[in-house]
Length: 153
Image (cartoon, rainbow, N blue to C red; front, side, top):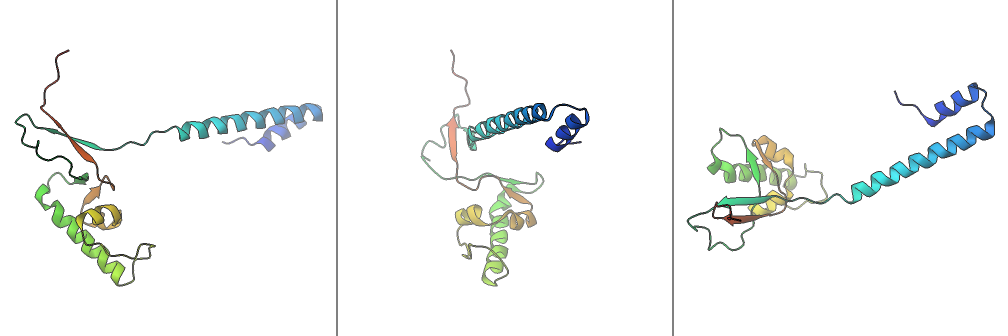
């Protein structure tokens, strides 16, 4: 049950509390509500943006030559073959492009996509859901290479 300011004011008046006193109490309640709302806004404004980072164990230095390559995180069913992910992205993109080109896609972006990177950034989740995949990062992220050893302190 949510108690409103009107409810509080009504109860105070019913109990015979002087009207000036009721107004003072209500103004204090409003001040406290405003103060709490201000704190909530400040807390929401300090929230840090997070990103995905892929950590690759590479003790044999196999990936040392790859300096910067954009990567996306895509989730799929465990029983599905991970080598099929590009095919699934392509099928979702075909459906998206079909809807865009036939006018059944009501969107401000009426542009069909022709690259995997464009697809991962622009195609909506509805099309990927049909292929049982989920794009976790719409923007490319990075891979950090490690030799899989914790440094001695």
